[in-house]
Image (cartoon, rainbow, N blue to C red; front, side, top):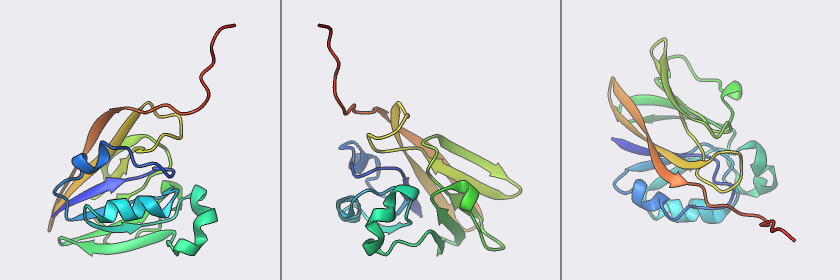
Length: 160
């Protein structure tokens, strides 16, 4: 099963994201969604499961949990925004987090840890990234998908 991973959209869905997630069977959003429109747009691609990030507190009415444990494709996945808040259950195969805006894939003691980086315009990251997680029973792998430079927002300063 192919799962799209995304985090830290902060209310902006980069136009390159839908093509990068084309063909996934599910999308997991690791928090700092920023707007219900993000979840609506992603749900046009595939089923979406999401957790709240530290910047989603004003979106409490969305009802997003802070942690989510799901079984998918024979793997147990723990979804959380900040890795330091992770509380995976015994036997968790994959931990997906966001928050740091740094794309990472690594394995430790039999658990695969994935942070898809950041897909929004807000933050210090220079590049938009998402990740693809492949799960098939005991076989799990992930890859970071680099979509290109972040689109800048804000006031441009010009010389006088």
